[in-house]
Length: 231
Ligand SMILES: N[C@@H](CCC(=O)N[C@@H](CS)C(=O)NCC(=O)O)C(=O)O
Image (cartoon, rainbow, N blue to C red; front, side, top):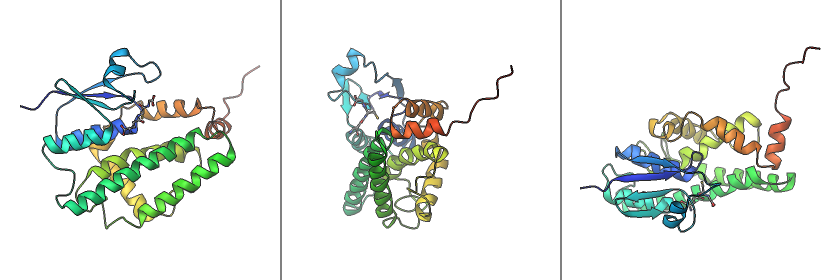
């Protein structure tokens, strides 16, 4: 019998989303428990050695680190999301790591304190996406017709750009047609859509505004002025 699964989540966390997407793609029932990372409960700190989400509780065991969770799900649940061929599987694992490194750059992009640091992150992201694009096949997904774990990782990556695109044109993705087709295919996928709640865009917007970063400044400057006050 499969252990009962509970995914300890944070509403905005892209690493949580990849686990939720994999669970949905596999058609596995699971519970979701949300915590406040700004105020971590003691029980969470006891089961999460790095104090990070996601944690997957499987029966009596807590698994931390999203890639460990994805591999556990591959080992124990139906509907494989890794290619069967060991060489392809290894290649996909490499691109999953690449996706995590893009997430680090995205965090650097929205946290950069000044224009110079911000420009460096734009450059890093532009370079990584252009390298990624040269490895994309005919689509619609990373490895072709089948949705894989690499897709589960990049769905949440591209989701950030739905918000960034509303703030401005940073030149990170435009013109990269294969990448944009992939982004569209992921945005339509039910598992990707449902990995976050309906409040996600507003919550991310609020989170980014409160960073006191260079991006927050751009966002504040681009806020539309309110209606004129009648006197
Ligand atoms: N390498 C980790 C990264 C997870 C991670 O960075 N989680 C963030 C939220 S998205 C977190 O819990 N941050 C809280 C903290 O670092 O205190 C994984 O793949 O699971």
